[in-house]
Length: 460
Ligand SMILES: [Zn+2]
Image (tube, rainbow, N blue to C red; front, side):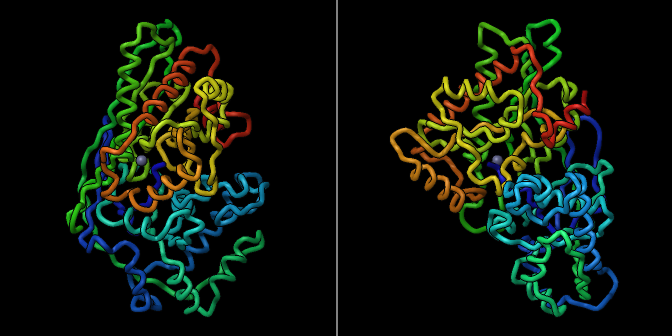
């Protein structure tokens, strides 16, 4: 569960550097206080102007986003989309958050539609995380992949709900009403008649980071051209020098656990007397916390063609909580591989726990998603909430405590009480899944009608 593809700053630079083989990432350094984030918009009163230079038209941005929604909806079958999927099961996946509801998609699509900038209104229940997460994930440097021709916004930001409310009020309108109106397919963009001036000085420094990939060749003369891939991100949030006290983001669980599992899987495969028919790829990917950048690059530049990759199994943040009795494999049910997942889960005595909060859109928040986008059947493997000697409430409490007190915080660090039985169990389970996928004769596909089916077929 590696959540936050929150871009670090409301300003997207127009120039991004570097090129060629290896993964290249340009990183942006801002010559402004680290805490700028969007909190500065709290001072929007002072920054409201009728129209001066270096402004962009907020109303125009809103309008474009609205057009975007319509376009996305047509793409999905002619129904107008909501800013956030509501519980109408006929629209998108009902309450489940699809990629179309993710903030990344909104920025991407606004840019494709020619918007100069966009401001998203942060609402905790819609985002499934609080403002703190937006702010923490968006202060300091922000990394971007070198521009690949994809349209980018010149400015992108979040705004707090009450600040947005005041802004809309200044225009003589009511935000609550507008948000509720926006749920109707008859909703039309409303000019706000206000302009927001924001000026950000930014500095760009190019740097390079690497995905590290190992390959174990398959034994079948033909099938060895194909592969099964394991992924786990090795980056975290680094050090925040301006923060007093412990300012090292260790990322022990997110994703030291996944890194350990990946290495152990590689060891187990390499030392196994038997070898799988297809080749196995172990990809330790970078810059996940910066927006799935390493895996995005990997998906766009796979070591073998994407259609030759049977399956991607991803590990991210497997908490060391003891002996798991459940497994989470959200997304697996969308693939032809699911019967194998089910039977192996039974063999391992795991109950498959359905995604408890589909509205949080976890499927779109870790590296397997980068693989799915290019058509590769992909999902993450993680434990559920029920552990041996504990009831489910205990597991849920651990999870809630982690999210609130440790997730993306310096306190995500090693302590002796950690019980890695769960990590070992998830590794063994993933080994079995990968082994089956590497040896079965048939190709793994997305189920008919799935949102990634088209990409899979297109890559063949
Ligand atoms: Zn993570």
